[in-house]
Length: 128
Ligand SMILES: [Zn+2]
Ligand SMILES: [Zn+2]
Image (cartoon, rainbow, N blue to C red; front, side, top):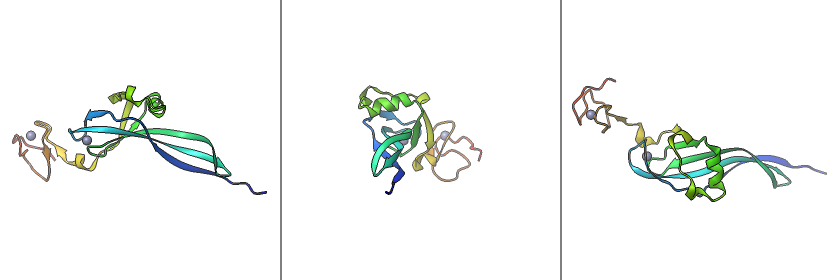
């Protein structure tokens, strides 16, 4: 008799599309949530799921957040995502979107692309 057991990672999209004002790029966007977990399978039949982690990604700039409030993630999984609102304390920024890596002026908040000693928007000196 042979015995096949395996563990494989799985990702599923969740029913959650909250419109947001993105704190990363400052545009209007949405969170798209998904869950990742590992599945233990026996004879290719999934037996149980473990190591569940919930994530949210912004559609505006592709920033990735971990949803540390698992209860909210579980609600999304049950299809109750329309009742869930993610607050700042529920999520942790894992990775900023590429367009957010440009610096912002600490005085006037405009995006600064390139290397300036003075802000092209407000003219204040920038320390680099
Ligand atoms: Zn954004
Ligand atoms: Zn400025």
